[in-house]
Image: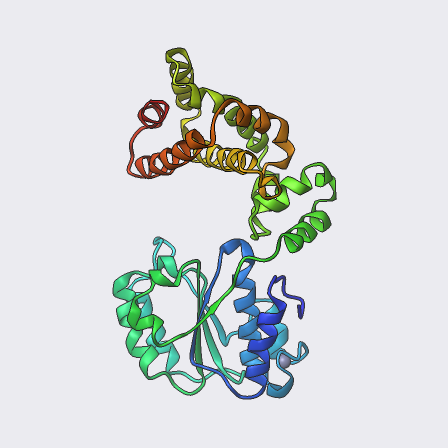
Amino acid sequence: MYGYDIFHEDLMNGLINAVRGGVNAHAYIFEGDSGLNVENAARLFAAALTCVNAEIAPCGSCPSCVEAKADTNPDIIFSKPDRDRKTIGAKNMRALEADVSTKPFAARRKVYVFTDASIITEEAQNAFLKTLEEPPEYAAFIIVTENADLLLETIRSRCVIVHFPAVSENEVRKYISEKYPQESDRLDFLAKYCAGIPKRADDIISDESFETLRKSALDRLPMLLTRRGDDIFELQSYVEENKDDFARILGFWMSFLRDVLLLQTDAASGIINVDKRDALRRICAAYDPKKTVSMLDALATAQKMFARYVSPKAVTYWLAL
Ligand SMILES: [Zn+2]
């Protein structure tokens, strides 16, 4: 859309039309999964806000639009941490406050884009509040985040929150089949597994260990359900060998077991691991749905335990028992 790689054309058209009609706020929160190209949506919106031809913004041909596309527009400022830091602190915000008071170079407006709200410290948010309360007429702010709740309520309440939802399975399918024609064999699986976040496919496809790990996790799933001493021992050594991937292993088990439950309850159309249907059916036949449900609960608890630094081996032992 306008040469920006984004997934939410309708939503962006709505926002852009408002800008053309002169209806715009000073501050926006763009909330959505990073796999949805929300940052590109923010770049496009910044171009629309700064374009000198307001009624057809972003016109695509004025200097402001051309520079916006190349990320060289001096009136679109991407807020970044200092080089030796990982967060945006109060010091950065005070510098921003000083910068806001100088007028745009050439554009209609001066737009500040925060590409990741999770790195803005609470102190910085408090420092930002003053700017946000009384910005000059030409200033606009776009805060990109996966979760608006990470921001202080005082910030949120002063921004228009635009939520970028997951897209349809069909749209994910289109994205994958256009970008990765060689993946036609596992297209069905990928389109479902990405759960509406197209760019998750990029991570999976570029990760050569994904399928190996997924298969090894599936092979060991029955062991998790048997509670036999030998199996528990074998499982523990498996997770020990793959301890860096334990979060993903738990995720795979969760996804497989959900599918098993769907098969057991005659809701097979909802399954994600469509390419592993036979293996799932075998597991499904050997255990009853009650057991599947209790194991799913246990897996959810296991994920929490692991997040609290319980070792993979200990979590697996607890799970198997
Ligand atoms: Zn323009």
